[in-house]
Length: 280
Image 1 (spheres, rainbow, N blue to C red):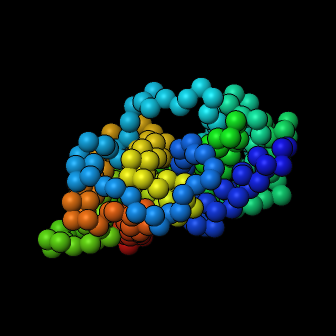
Image 2: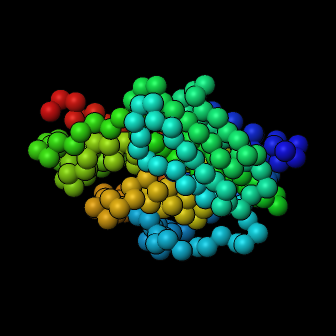
């Protein structure tokens, strides 16, 4: 592997993983090096969140340039303990690859210059594969989560009931209420929380540093995290979008780090809702 490309991939992956600890089910936007500092001041128009959306764009929107790096991964979403899981990124636009598995495992092997990988889990759980590629000075990173040993679905599942918070309550309090009103399932809530955490990580790592880039990356990540369930999440996502627009109008989303902090608050609120299922 070219030393310069290897350095770019390694540095970027290290920054993202250190910023979050664990990510889940997201796709990051393309970026070029060097990246600006995350704490820089950015311009935020008051109607930005009214014209752009975090809900998730249709596939095909904002197509990537033909000469930009792009990871295309072919891998299952579920598997069984002991099953051989195959991951294929051979259709990607890339000159080199780098893989990271969270949590790490000796039963994960990459071959064919990073174009293919195999994995076998010894116990149930969520396993996240982060793969980065470099191409002509650009980098693309995708995370793919595989659930090993899924729990059976209960058709009579109960949803938490959350009392409506007082006007002006923080996001971490409002989000459980919005989720309860929309009757959102726990597993999808955890995936969406990880989506917001991952974008916050890219902001702190100096990758997404403008509101436009942050919103687009969030839109992509939410679509990847929720898949076909995205439509049923729109009531919650639209509430969030309205809140973000209000914060922007108040001047509280004017730096990249303010966006990162707000995104982390969203993740905390989603996880708070998910924990309510434990008491049902």
